[in-house]
Length: 378
Image (cartoon, rainbow, N blue to C red; front, side):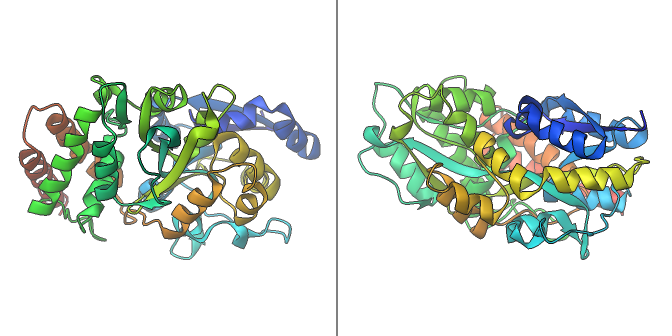
């Protein structure tokens, strides 16, 4: 339909604020006469659906995981460059600087933000011997978990599902003073410090539920929210749902960011196949406006604008911690094949986590595959 914009969105809490709060879409539709149709796809199927959308026109607007995919999509001309025609009320510079770095490339804007996912530690204050600081190193986190382990309940939860494990492991790698890849995509992890990082990550398994290898967003949410563990690391974009009306004793939950937290900003971009660019840009500016960003933050837990954090800091106790995380956060490099590199690492890390191979063997094999990939590409 000429008066319809079709949106491809990832299955995440922030997206449901757009569709569940009917007034958000109704206001835009009444003002513009443009109907909005959201298609929400589970995370496990999202990337393949997204790639199909670039080959065959079905969606005008798509959600993109910030710097993870932006360079590849720009180089392959999958996304349209935005016009930057912002009015004063939009206030582009109100968007957090670290988020702006994710949605821009070569001084051009390709995306406008929806919500963020950065590493946040949640813990039960009354169940710990000592309250953690607002910024926690991985070394400190490991010691806190060890010091508070008993036989009463599970101490900790990891996101060790294959769809999450690479990013869950990343802060452990950075805690050793190294990273996954350099600015050219060269792997940096195949060194003794890298092996030690993965060994330390895998060692956390013994403080977790037996089936933690299957834990993703929903399982971690359930364990933290239902008071089945003492500590857990989740995403900023999950905090609003963890802390909703179903949370047991929410006042007992404290928050900290990891010293080596990583973040990605899920954002909206315009599919290169879109024939309604002007209408699509209007929608992108509306959906990422100050008013909507506040609503998204209240629902999912992680807004993208300074003004939203300032307005909500009294009501949402985790906002100062998330804001601090976004001020310090270090993204992965803008690479043209980040997804492929992560997939290779993930396959090997999963084997090590499941005790099929050693941590050293996993990282050696991942390194060799990435090097061979680069040779073949060359």
